[in-house]
Length: 497
Image (cartoon, rainbow, N blue to C red):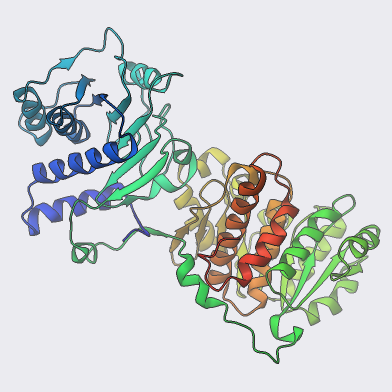
């Protein structure tokens, strides 16, 4: 359950099914949500004495009213501020009445927010799709202001689209978010990662059998499951057992990119790695990493024998888009070998789209994804899940849509989201390393779908391990190599590098 991600519509359907088939009233679910939030408050902020609860007019606000009543019953100070009154007759109105009946009051917003130790965001729930404006925008600006206390968001930080992770104009910056019933897919990608804080899930006591009738829209990468995909090597193994990656790229001045991709493939266990590149890169690659077999390639004819020997091709890091680049790109695709395509390999593909028959992984960042789709980066960001699925279907390949909360999609619509990685990985060469990682795993016999998921996972975890050593800013792509090596050899990927 904890690895399943649902859309807003699916979550609402789960709510309705719990009410209809299990006989759990909506108000009882609201009470359970308030109780779950109360447990988080006491655990995370045990010293808090005064808590401001900011309520909207919907069921999210109803959760807030009932939480405020629990805070008051525990002998603490609860101050409720309401953006708008709940509609009569619903569960939220009943919760508001219960708060008032318990002696609570509702403060107006004219005087601003009162001081407090913690603020609870119960303004908007999962149904928000419009841009936040007017009084709601002013309120969120006040809550986000420097010096205001930390925020616990109920279900979704107000202003975040629960399906896409986008901030709808403005959104709450929460220290923690407790989400109810099921994980919302948007909380794992895009801007939501900057707004949700620590994320906790409470299923409100709903039985696992209920979820079997509602297949998840997406999932989280699961390292425990992935660990079995790379068994221990036999004692009589030799390098030929573990694949031969050919890394193609490194136009003039860009030899570092293809060297990073090649070394990454070695670090995750590929038996052999050849590099096809410009002549002026060969001596530098040999000096820095002699384990790579660097070849000076002048044209497509010189590439042909290397393609014949390769089991997997990593195409694109530092490739460029000139005549030399285009000739090598065409030859590599014509070889019909398993492929990992990145960088200028993707830019050339955008100019000449095609479906792939062999096992293929494309690894675009949002700008490259937009070119492949013939749209704008804003369109990609608007719904990263839809963009990844469309790319996978259009090109017949596994897609890694990079970014905060990278998505891995396959042509049948399956999507998994990476919950690891950090902003320090937004630096030159990180994508080249990922290309090599995936190619190295593909060369060891994994399918494109498995190689992409495992590659994204170990790449992100290696980045996290590098950040844990010395901080995020200033991480170099090459800093990941030792961590990749350790992760590749961990008996379980729960053993962090």
